[in-house]
Length: 153
Image (cartoon, rainbow, N blue to C red):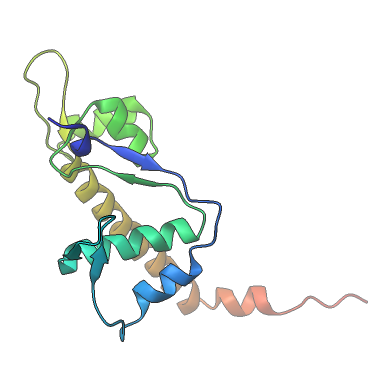
């Protein structure tokens, strides 16, 4: 396996990426072609162009970006770190059947794609729960109760 297929994190550059982001976000941009260092023209497939645009947008906001192949297998600690939870909590998710895993020897391994799918499901469930809480608060008039200023005498 070459080093280009391993996880790679890049910090945003010090110079502004606003011009590049504007160019990549412009629907009227003339092409999705890159010019290589020796002048060769490379046509970007739409999927690669979208990833490049997303990477530049994140870096323009000062965020570091990690690129990792989706087929990559993670340790339970790596997966827990990705989800922002403790390893014991992650292992409990595995035991509860929330995320499929393999255990060829003593150590469990999970596919990055499975961890990302779980994170997406959890995000959707959280949004739905928050929307329901807002709906309940609205139906019960809680917004009106908290929005009315109290008068002091």
